[in-house]
Length: 256
Image (cartoon, rainbow, N blue to C red):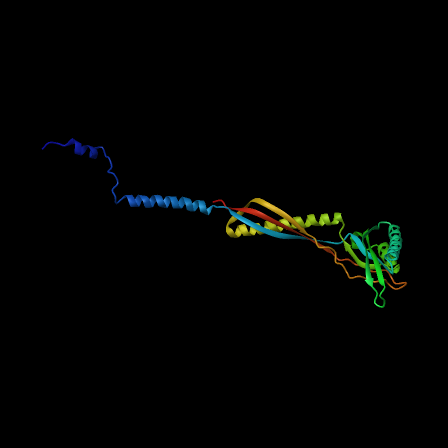
């Protein structure tokens, strides 16, 4: 029987046969598993965008005293009412500026016509506001300031407010302190959230600071004191300054 070299050659050379149809689904399943594993690994290491805010607080004592008083007068004519206010305000300003350390300013001059209760004749009322400020280290009201306010009350001025507050420099220092507190709280929140998620704090994308500083508490109007009355008393409490910090932070997965 003749020897057929064409049929035996592939076997001697060790050539593999092409994959049959039964092998192809298994190969596809293996390739799909590899792709899924790679995608899953990429998803597991995705970054998290965190947006949060925190409020910082600074509590400090006032470093200056403030007072607001009104000069008021009524008369049958606007001219007379205004003349009375002008005269009284001129004296009040002179008294205030004679006290060392006191800053005196005026605002809100107004005149209006009102009807008298027992007459048909019109009555004009004029008024103007006098504002006083004076340094008060340690939130201790200087006696010169309260004595001045008492003297102005005796002259007929109406006391609207008497309180302690922060100067511009004091408010700026307190705001910086509150900002630092807000940022520390913000970072602590971010660290806690990252630890819970198994991440770590990465890049800070955005940050904003919003100050919310309440003004001094304003008491009600205090009418003119009786003759020989003692000057008004003031014991201002602490001032609270608040600052809110908001940020967008990237959380990244922990390394292997």
